[in-house]
Length: 343
Image (cartoon, rainbow, N blue to C red; front, side):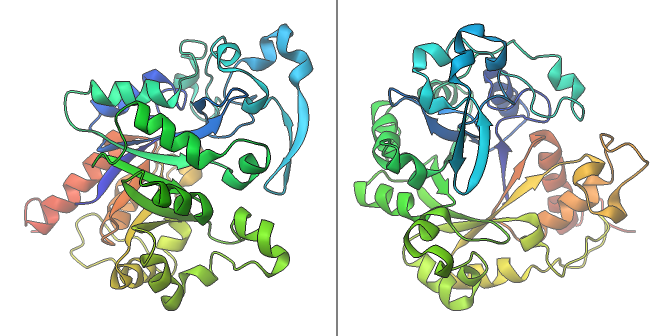
């Protein structure tokens, strides 16, 4: 069964990485929650998609933090704003979350200012209190960058999970776009599944830090030989939808044909799980043939897209709207069992 992983919580309905988003994702039937982990100045892991937080919090409204605004280069990208590692946890706790895409998701933006930023331990407590088992798929962000800045992400993650009783928990998966931190966590015996995230193009930041322009690209790390090597260290890979569906057209929901994905087939043959990101129903994020009407915020034919992705045999999908992904999975299961298929 394909796992439905709530991408930053129910981020299609509430500001991402907020308590409201996490709790709603659980209520909507998500199998697991995906938080992103970044550190504070005092080494606390907080849940933000990036360490630059001007787009997802009200930090710019706090005059007392105006002098913290700065410019940094993170993994080759120059960013200006406010960064978590320049604040203590007590300072960040004064901030409130905001919708990252307010024009696209105005109903979510209505909840701006409602929730505070959370720590990893806060989310783990939410999962422990859930009425059913719900997994954690935690993404470690910018590990090499933070290591150079004095924040050893492997140690911080291992310590936080250990303190909360999650070390080795069967619900645990840890992912990163960098292999170094995954290896570090493996050597620490942190446990759980280790999943290597791969962009469609470019190279991993930790590889670039060591090898410069000769660093292997993510594409080179998807050859059969490279996949076999990855399987010796890690449990799976996670790829963008454009990689998963390359050369594959979506098919109607009630079409019984199998949907083939070359990367799913080859990675499975190497013994790797395959996850993909991110399922979103809005026209802006759908393939052009599946868009309906001219409003980029309106939902297009997400059912055809979601079910086609799931029918590749992918092991897990990240979704902003967990309920829609659960519906799509049910449609696929019904078709496979002969329920609701073509007459």
